[in-house]
Image (cartoon, rainbow, N blue to C red; front, side, top):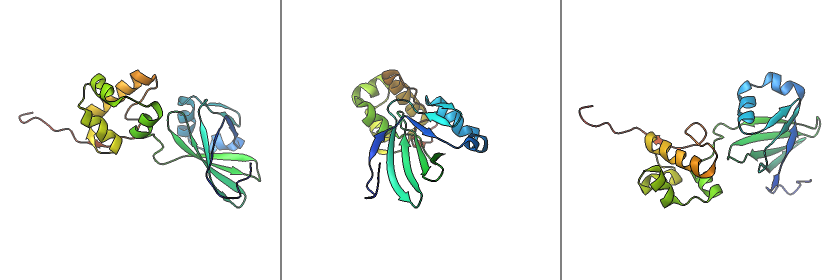
Length: 171
């Protein structure tokens, strides 16, 4: 596909080819992350799970730059080289999905979610707006979302702003 107009667009993707040396020289952290998200890596081919989307960002000389979004919202940067016909993948600094992304993706019913999680609705709305909440409330909400969607969401794989818990006097 040509991208001469520089417009962003999305396509479903299944597989990319990486150079053989990439997995030897890259950290095992990216390899572990991709495997935990349902990707399979065989030699230089990475196969992504169904629902993965690739968004074109820009063409720079001999390479196209994309953002790859996996079904759980994790994002990677891909640089595809026309010269080598290979892709290099990079985990973005904060590649975890936000709670808002998860809500939009699953169309969660927020009042039911608050009830199931045992938290006040304000906690749900704070998470949507990126307002810090206590970790204990975020953990309950993410557990309820996991139960509802069948996808494990937790503080390690979702971006949630956390504020310190208030301690009871005399504790």
